[in-house]
Image: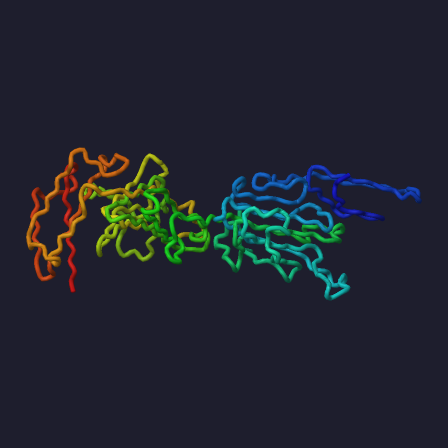
Length: 483
């Protein structure tokens, strides 16, 4: 037979308990050719135990105790438990984790770990290897597809653990949260858990001699939770910031963006707050349009300190929150445009959920420099990118209708004058051609000397929200700078 030998037993007494790794096991009885079986007997007690099928989240390599956990084919997180069945002496079990891309990292923490040391009565040479029952090795790799053979592709010097005094980093408090072991307090890196340097990671659990006389699970076992962490981010990194990104129209005139899915930026990874800025920089003649079509920023009603309001005058979304709140739990997505030395919010959404892709939130700028800020405050240790997220499309387009003018008296222009603007018939601002259904926005800035007053005269009448629902609206913003 090609089956591995699990245990040999000779003489009288009870045979050690043997547990098979599958649904079949072979027991052979051999008699001595030079003796007669006299008053000998063999009695075997057999029981059947059902185990959870592992194929849902890992792939077994042939008949070996070797498993492959591929993020492209299996779950991105799960729990691995060392064998509960009898292992042949000098054998091993291996677990290889393969990320879905080069941006994936493997996060592992041990919920429990046991490896008995050599009993003092069995130590003959004090300098001998003290691994009595097993050895655990952790291999790291920068490559995505190293061979399953640990001699090829992995680090030459893996982390090794053996005996009761040399154990891996533990996150014992996670044991209070079975079966998924998501603890109320995050398992910190690097004090309580491991994070790979590349998309591939591996564990090797080796079993040594003398195991044919003991119950394996009482002498060597572990429970560990793994998760593939996606570190991919869109755009170009800005300095050494964790999640601030830049998008330049000279590189692409449009594209799609979303929030980072790196768990270590959220509550479950140990962070209470997150703030990521997406910078859109276009040519001077361009503007920016951001369309949000998938959004999840909800917090519980009892903690809701912000509401999204649509202003029918400005035709923009606003975030409204009560003043002087000490612990303001807000999840928001806001857009700010920068022009000259000024900045203004062109849209804000908070504590809102919209998974209907037909419902879209649109932020239009008047300039080519826009910053989109994704921010969440006071996250709990169980919240992550599954609780707060967004997907959006951005576009750079040429502004052909109304140029942004500055009338500055400091530059020698006349102390008085007029501004005229005529809307072209059948106007369209965007390359997509659907801008007719969106408001046409133009802006002029008038600057006078600080010691002078500025008088503005408009044709029309003062309006309120309910008496001007259609037509042209002129909004005047006055800035006062007191020295």
